[in-house]
Length: 310
Image (tube, rainbow, N blue to C red; front, side, top):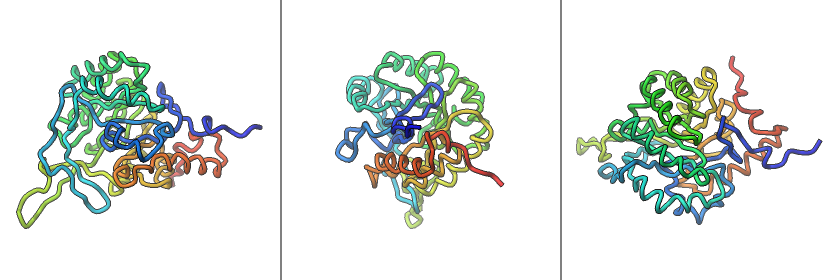
């Protein structure tokens, strides 16, 4: 019997979305990729998710926008971006040339607006691999509305998937009573996969000045501090909902990747770690391949969801 090739070993399928490996870079931590070019070979990645785009350009929240915390980063960027027109004009061709999957992350103020954006992006199937719907940003007004109520989540996904033939991922917030209910709704609406999780809402205070540190007061906590929360959510959704999961939250080494995979994630996104170790994602691809060989696996899916519960 022939040994599996690297393509067979690392490739993953998330319903309609096929990736050459399960290591992605998370939206909001990789810019539009140009700034990361000196640090890694993009073609080694499973996919790139650029920063969220909206219909109109956004200047984002007032500074300060970031503050370091214990084992994490608190940000209140406010979806600062160029808008969809400039994205298509200035960034799309470059991103599509990077020899890896391009997953475009979008956010809208209404279900109709999100569907219209999806319809526009659907015109570029040769360049865009999939869409990720940001219905979970905790530091913009209304940023989590569609991701906290199952009915709205399902409506959003149904309208987007009816407007667009591209695979669709729903990026969900942990800032709800039951993420499982939201994931069920995303599946019912036609999502191909869910990204778990977006940042955890938090704040930072300068007690001497009696003022919040962030200009937007509240922000999203990311980094190793939220990994236990992200793992818990992945476990819960994997046990209750039959939908592919992309794990996100505090991944900074290969053991983190393996934990998310055995918990039930078919792929992972590297986020905050890109800021202090921009070459990490490609390093993890190599280490994942080595781990799969050591575990005598012929493909990643053999380890997905293999966590043994007491």
